[in-house]
Image (cartoon, rainbow, N blue to C red; front, side, top):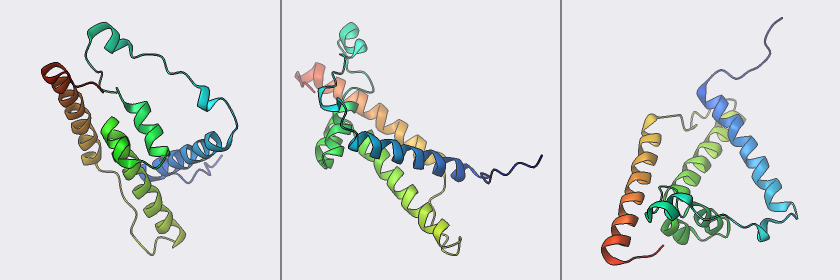
Length: 140
């Protein structure tokens, strides 16, 4: 039996995953569920250690981004707008390339540098927030 799946490259898999993420996001935004009443539990890492965890601020950053406040999202957690930007650039460029029948080779391709940049942002965010908190009493 011949496999009819057309997914051949890393970009094909990421594009499929990005499309599914987009559909789920649209569904979550239009579904009249209990999103506004959702209670996020406190960060266990912060409760136990007193330090901010590497993900602290992520939920608030997503909420701020969904409300269109990119600066506030960056303030809460810079990895969120970075990830959203890379996602948007990838999806738009890949869609243009695919709709053009690959005549316009503008599709963003996977590079390890994107992941390394995300790791650097994560580590810097963690270090700076904890340094500001313990040295100057800064609260997130």
